Image 1 (cartoon, helix red, strand yellow):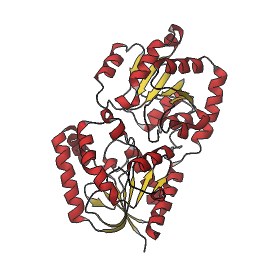
Image 2 (cartoon, rainbow, N blue to C red):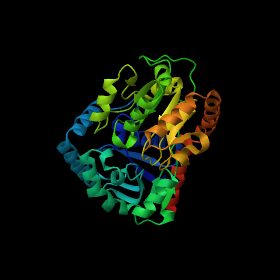
Image 3 (tube, rainbow, N blue to C red):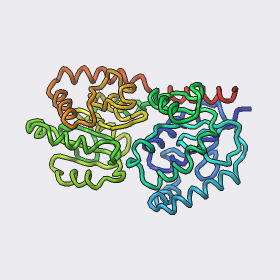
Length: 373
């Protein structure tokens, strides 16, 4: 009889970014692996894997409403906890890909993914309600985990500093790149207009992503570069973004904000970009630079947190705290065709080392090991 594995899949009910994308990609391969009898928790227990083609529209609409109202989110969490406890079948393993294992699930083993500690280090990068929930539940519930998964050696080091887990209880598994989507495209058949030449940045419009630093760097660019290259931003509006949105809206001639777009649209935008800049202050992994590399776009990345580990020698690094340094790295790249070619070649090779299939197989290995322990 195959071990029974429960996956918290609530994040699949929203548009897939960050943790939702991670949960979806790993779960997709788990579903096809035949190593476990899989169940999913969506606020109810189900054997159905909700993919892009089978999303329950009423549930998605309801979740969108709940996410906009703080007291509804708190009520929803209480209801989810009650549902998990009162109706839980028995499982061999429970995998929580989103930081906080729920109480009351009947399981022999718990595996939890801890992505980063931005909720401590960059509190302004999260809505106030989320910080309150994490502070109330994370440190108490995480102790129930038998094994922690994290996306980088950098994050593993943070876990060892901040949580009472032994080194052999923490497994580093890199995220992957979906090479079926993030690849070279022969033509750009986007349904919206983008500039002919542009600098691209992908990430939520929120403080941790350091878009303010990038906007200042763009303003510092030489008039020749600015007249030739526009700035394109992609991602959710996020929060605490009033100043950022004011700057974006004040210079629509040079700055385009596309908002959230589909992965396939994003891949084609990567393809069309002259360079990709990722000046984030803090990342537990940082997937967009690898996606850009897979689309043959040269990358400039922050020199902080996990980025040098993930990008290796395939990116040009900048100091995210120094807008002048970001500006200089952009100009040096855009003014040097040979440098662009070298970074494209290195980036394609580096991105090829990451796949969701490889990541999922490492998850399966961890699940089997925790069953045997």
